[in-house]
Amino acid sequence: MNYKYILIDLDDTILDTRANTRNALKEMSKFVDFPFNDEQIQYWYQMNDSLWKQLEEKQISRQELMNSRFPNLFRHFNKKIDTTNINQQYFALLNQQHELMPGAKKTLQELNKTYRLFAASNGTSDKQYSQTAGAKIDQYFEKIFLSENIGFDKPDKKFFKSIENKLQAPPKDFLMIGDSLSSDIAGANDSDIDSLWYNKNKIVSQTQVKPTFEVTSLPEILNILQ
Image 1 (tube, rainbow, N blue to C red):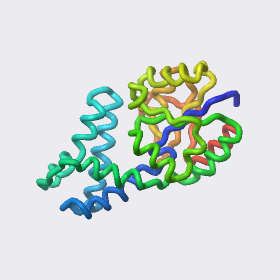
Image 2 (image 1 turned 30 degrees about the vertical axis):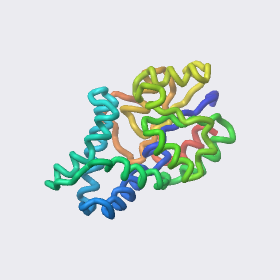
Image 3 (image 1 turned 45 degrees about the horizontal axis):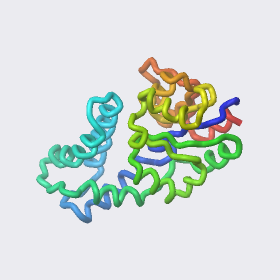
Image 4 (image 1 turned 135 degrees about the vertical axis):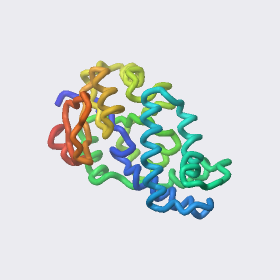
């Protein structure tokens, strides 16, 4: 392949964000009068996915997303809980979690031998830096490009254009790897960047978004790029 730069999403692509979230929420039960059982965590996943989708579509701001999650969760389960400083407690716990998706570290190690790797994420900076360092994968990324620093969220073309400008490279030099059709793949496609969809759940896409490549496990990427 003629790619010079590989952009890689972090959450649910490299980092096992569902596992890390579950572990952090269960830890929260030590500080909040709420059990964070499996039903409640499943609701969190659904609510959180919906809110991130709204952020991608510019219907809400990042701050609105962060501020609404715990109030929404407790309201849904009819619990009155003071949410003052609750985000700080949650992120302090979340930042300590660093489980990876299967095959993530080995895939990064191998790709790093041939390509220049950059993380490209909508996630918050403290979390991404803490978790990649904790998982000992930060060494494989030359830089972590974050939407909160760039000023635009994936799939906005301005997110990808900013990276092109920083690296002084045209779209043809890049490949974007990610698990989200609506964020990673659609954003790359709109920016004339080739894309690789990590379809870990083996779903049949119901959208018009078409990736350049598709895999169902991370090690499969090596078969395509090496």
